Figure 1 (cartoon, rainbow, N blue to C red):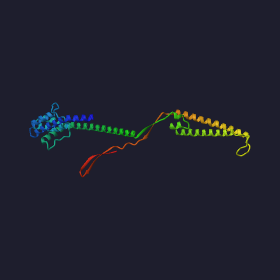
Figure 2: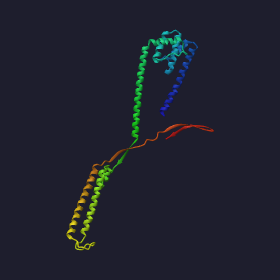
Figure 3: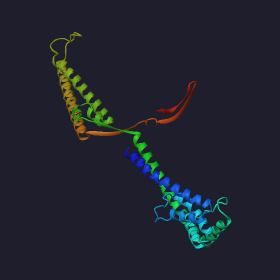
Length: 304
């Protein structure tokens, strides 16, 4: 908003100056058209002299006024001044040629003569301007390419969404591979989950067998078959179940401890991952004109 107000203020201040320049030019041109070359030369001279308050601020208007000043000087036979002004004008616009419909043949001939005299200088000016134009074009191309790369980079970043996964150290204390799954190591998680599950199952099964054999009275016949029970065999089976129970329980405890330790060592509090994200559809502004019996409607249509 401040920039807009500043621009409007500059335009408001520049408008009277531009109007004054136009009026000065019109008066000088009127003197030239009336054949009053003395007055025309004086007025154009003041407008082209940067030391005078009447100096034209607009470059295009100065370029328009200078040939009429030159023509007025030629008409007054002030040749030296005219030649100097022609050289200045050609240095400013090397390709300028006085229009036949505006200037007499002697004016155009004088321009051609001065052009021939300073042609090498004009060629050097043209070459220097072409070089600067190429440099400006190359610089503009570099800026466009840099802007395109920046936009491409911004779009690439915008198409990726960063997701932060908050992990808990407490979950690393849970057995059955829970800590490994949280840390993203699924293979190790499945190993601890299955091995610890088998260990727990073996511990429970062996404990059940040992309990059953320990509660069986070998002095009584087998309740299912009615045959006598071998006490030595029953005792040996009990001890085997106990050993299996101890082994399964110990292996399970070792696996649980190893899993917890590994989960704590591999623990990362925050894990950042990226995933693709669709960009919003660009806003389109389209003009719309609709004719109705009572008139016409004109407006803008916004499309998302």
